[in-house]
Length: 170
Image 1: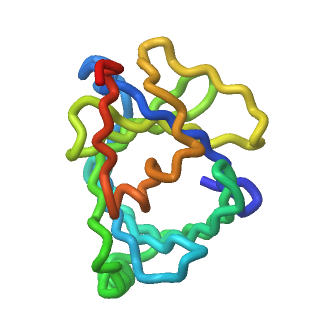
Image 2: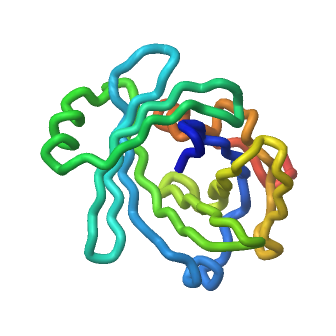
């Protein structure tokens, strides 16, 4: 989602929530492939499966700062999706994740669970202004905010997956 062509987002690295929490969310399966492009933009296609439906999108983002991006996203058909996949960046892995959406504090939150982690996940919130206050759901155990950490973008994960110790023991 974007507001006036901008995406304003905060992102958190969290401990994997329990299954009971995730059962109360609206869930979808996402396959995200990054395309060849330039150093200033990320270009991707996404297949999102929800229930019996499937939606394909093409998104181009240009970073303005760690929280704000110019975003051009539009729904495409399966044929265009398959054509764009031919431009997949061979240096990047396709990202597969389950997205769990829920409302808290009057806002829509997105919780992304990746197959390559069993102990952590991402929690994201899109805002209308960079200064908006955010209150995390009490059921969520925050590891830390990663909005400003370039290793924790999906585009970065397609290149390398951080495996840092999140237990605080090492």
